[in-house]
Length: 353
Image (cartoon, rainbow, N blue to C red):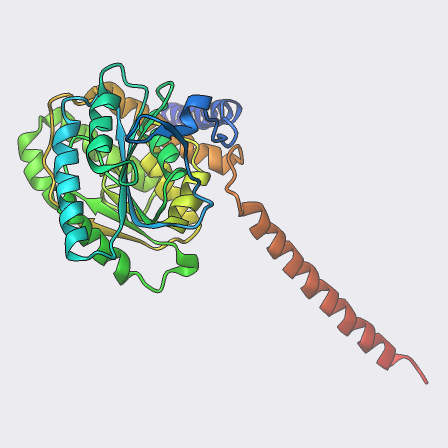
């Protein structure tokens, strides 16, 4: 190898290292602290079927329903009715077959500019506010932020997040429930079942442009390389949580927009929460999509890198990370104290009588 090529190689490595340090520094100084669940006064209550305000419950309360269904919705006045009709038809039939089964559907209007809340409220009037509730956010928080608000106001033992476009067939919840049951025994009552479209990958590639396929593979590689191992489809909006798992993961969530799923699963894997991936029926809904392919993928790529760097640099810390380190430190101190006692005893025994 010529000296010039060697120098260029060294320069390239140095520049890459400098760039990584700079990006890590930017990620660190721009990191926000753990987002508090700040609620506007209008977000602390919901309207019952008679149009009267009632306070929202808390995730800290004991569950009073078997299932909570969370539907984040932003400008979904046209697509929401199809999804709600399918979901409520299934849930009502299931309740008639098994009267012990109880549910609630919570639509979280994420600061919509259309009539999403009014459309959702019609279902509240039809089925009653014990079954259907609408939380209207004062300003747009992002999908992750909207679901987080719903989680902290839910009453279910199990919590399902489902997209407002109805891309996933709602009866597939039974597949997620079976997947969740197969994970038992659940450590600390925590487990997650993720709906997956990975089995449809070949079909979707055939229908997509080469550019979108390239973006998809690039995103999947970054997810695997930087954040989440063992989950092929992190972005499917059909996920089922035990109440305890939802509380633990969403309480630690920083990202509130499109890459929130990845951080959520990163947190779950950190806490060693069991996760299963379950194939579901899914239809790609193009009309009204909120994603602009290139810019949205670019934003998510940046979020993935920043997730990894912010946890790596300590800008973000998970709730029990310090406790874990403290336990290790205490354990080491106990071992050292024990060894000192042994040495003292040995020294005493060696002293002349």
